Image (cartoon, rainbow, N blue to C red):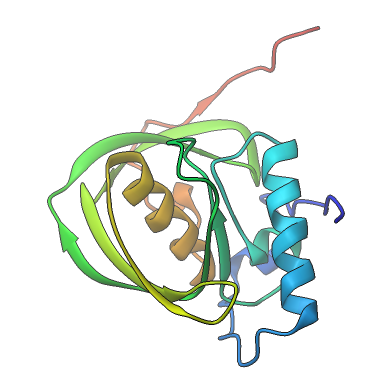
Length: 159
């Protein structure tokens, strides 16, 4: 496994639409492992492949709810319920946070890393993370959806 470089906000790749994964081969498995390592290293709750420069529909999420990391390949949201205001940040936008409206609950269908179809019914933080990462696959970043005048830049703590 290796930590990959996270693409930052001015990188054009973040505005591009990701492509479906046709075959879950060794390259995809390595990508998944590297994404998980990268997400944990930078203390994120989710990461999409485009954020490490790969235009493939692959997402990893761990909201630290005790269920471990979720790997979603070719994910699609099939159901949305409710909405609420949330605060969000992004590893590609270090130290920036904004408020936006996200669904309270979502159902997502995807393939797991072994190619098996999975369905996840998610609410609250997991639903938010799924929506955030799936937006990345469409070339949408959270500041594209932020509520007006809610962007905050937080200076990192000095060690």
